[in-house]
Each structure stands twice: as structure tokens, then as C-alpha cells.
Length: 368
Image (cartoon, rainbow, N blue to C red; front, side, top):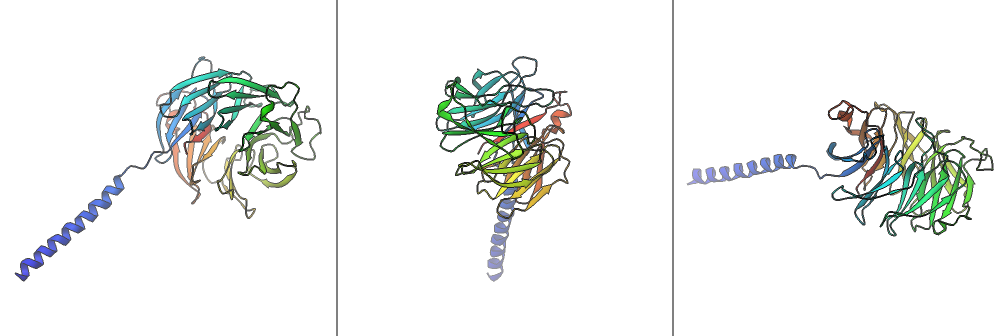
């Protein structure tokens, strides 16, 4: 009896142990949750929808309408109403897509090389900036457009009076739009209810004391690229691609608060939700600057095979950073906690699996 009891207990324990082993092995096979990001492939007139957790391309969205190079450039996502929007700098249009199906919903033609966008998600307005001289392309447009995103119609324009109003950021209440001229080294404070008023001239500020007081002069001292606001709208961050800096300004006065040096030609950047860090992609520095806004310390990810960087986007909890590299044709996904590379994606496109044209990935946006 004792021997049989011992055998039964032993068998039970072996069964339990086997169950634990199987459970762990099954857990290893459970697929990760898909987290979508949208990346514009400016050279191929399509959008890559990618899973940044797995590092895979899910599918592509075709935006080739003219067969002469429409050049999708930038994307913003409206998760409240389940839409995403894309600018076509060569085509002159802004496109609206269904976030669930990625089907084209509507579009509006505004001309003059639309570039970056700011989204008023609550009121469903889009604000569109202009492209700047780059890759042999430029526009002398001084206009910023306001679009009713519900029916994709133009509400009005504001002429800032300076060339290439490119960087753009919208206050949390939707009442104030900040735009910086890439050419004149001035930034502008626009009341959003003044769009369509041809007599209106926004308040302007110089990025540096060495900038001419007139914003009609294209000094090219700073070449402002992107803007971002702090969550309480009290601080405005500006990437200065010609002076290799991020400059921070007080939005109530326009006064300079701080300046951080970056790698060569800082381009797009992302501020973490707790505003403790700033991730800056340096276009010609082939590096990523990580600015600790609490201590002022700056570290660089520059030991990676990056080539001509452009856009970046942080995931909802700031643990993943997507970076686009037109020079390599790749997009990269980094673990921000460990500052390590997780995935390299899109490289197979450049190698010619389904296209012989370089993808030129630029804009990136993550579904939060």
C-alpha cells in the first residue's frame, strides 16, 4: 500500500511539473499585441503600416494619385474619431483615412506644398504648415491653412508674412497656434479664431538676438524645423537645424528659457509624457540626442548604422521610439529604457522585394 501511495503521489507531481513546463512554453509562443505605426514612404507614394512590437510590415496604403510623385510626408492620428491624416507635399493635398480599415475617406487640395500638421482633436480642425527648401524643392508660400476635418474643407488661411512657415504646434485648448519660419528665424503666435481674416498679422518673436528684427528677411541663422509645446502650454520647444540646438521659450512672453546642444542638424523630436526627456533625431549627425530636462545632461545614440534621419514618434507609455531614416531606407524601433535597438524594418523594400524605388521614410505616427 505504501509503495502504491508513493507511486500515485509521484505521478501526480510529475503531471503537475509537466503542466507547468507546458504552460511556460505556451506563454513563450503567445504572440505579442500588435501596436501600429504609420510611416510615410515619400519615395514610393505609399504608407507602411507596421507593428512596432514585432518589427513587421502589416500592409501598405497606396497614395499614388498623379503618377508623378505625390510624396506623402507627414501623418497625424485622431483616435477619438478613428481617422488619420496625411500630407502630400508634391500633390498639394491632405488625405483623410479610416483608422480601422485604412480606407481613403476624403481629401482636400490646398496647394503650396503642405508639410506638417497640428490636430485639434476635440473640434476636428487641422492646421497645415508649408514645406521648406530641401532636396531641390521649395515654396515661397507664407500661408498656414485651417481645415474643417469633418468635411475636409478649408476654413481659412493666415499669412504670417515669412517664408516657409514649417514647424507647427497647437495649444491644448485649441485657441493658439504656434508656427516657426524655417527661413526667417522667427516664430509666430496665431489666434486660431482669426483664420480667414486678411487683415490679421500674428505676433512674432525672434529665435535669437542675432536675428534681424524683420521677419521678411530670410537670414537662415537657425532654420527652425519642428515645434512642440509642454503639456501646460507654458513652454515652446524649437529644433534649430542650422545652429544644432533645441531652444526653449516662454509662451507668455516669448523669452528664451534654455538652450541645449544636439548633434548635427536636429530635425524632429519627441517630448516624453512626464516631460523629463527629449529625444531628438539629428539628420546629418546620424545620431539621436537624449536630453534629460531635469538634470541638463545629454547623451547620444551614435554608435548605430543610422543614415540621414528624419522623423520620430514615441509610444503611449514612452517605452518605444520609432525613427525614420531616408538615407538607409529603414525605420528603427528603440527600447527607450535600455537605449537599445529592437527592430530594423522596411529595409526589405529598398532591396527590391516589391519595388525598385527607394522608400525614403519620413513621417511617423503611432496609434496610442
